[in-house]
Image 1 (cartoon, rainbow, N blue to C red):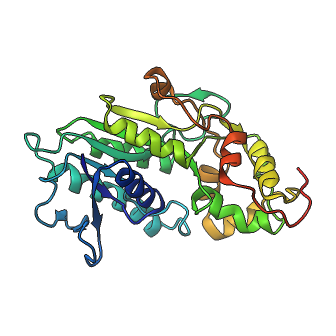
Image 2 (cartoon, one colour):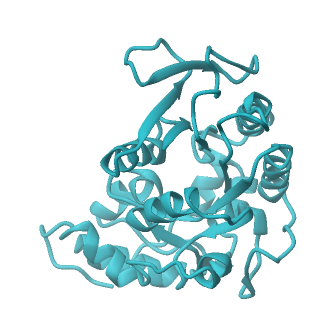
Length: 302
């Protein structure tokens, strides 16, 4: 299979490129900058262009492009960039796929932010969207992907666990310094997935007939307090100091804190489970064990 990847230079895109090659597939990496390798192809999502031959020579597309949700203060301009980067890249790919051409599969990124703050309720792909900036962003993102004329799956990804960055990387410095702690009450649910299972699910979906939204999360979400204790044990560091929310609100805005850090999303991967997909890391304990041995510099306390 020949697969084009949008967002190929990001954490997930880079990992997916490597995995597909390991499985014997060819990869075409869509890049915004100068083309420096034979597997790269320039695209300009803002202008709606992909250099020739476009997507006519691939069998499938995985689009992961979009500015980082936590990459800056949520100003009006930043939120517009978060939306534009997702919608423009998605529409560029959708309009570049010929329904009668070689490419007959699109996996387009989305996020569990679709569900908003759902409290303790267990949500799945049949649950309607929540309220707020992130849920509306995900609705618009998935709507753009829904215009594609070939079978399309939207990947509602949770917090991906990898030592290379992402959800864990954003917290590692604080936790390693012994300054990590719960966020707010710690009772809000965190839906997560190990990077190996995320990669397995995406490559599995490329060969699947599933379309529409699919939750890419492990089947056992945990509270933020439980996650904090587990991460502290993994790094062998104490987790006694709650996150200073006032300072974070000052840096990123109250809206960011409420929708990203305090929102509770207890997500079930119903469609994956019903289709027979099995998780190699179904529990947080197993996921952290697979990451290695953490930091052994000092005694840890939960």
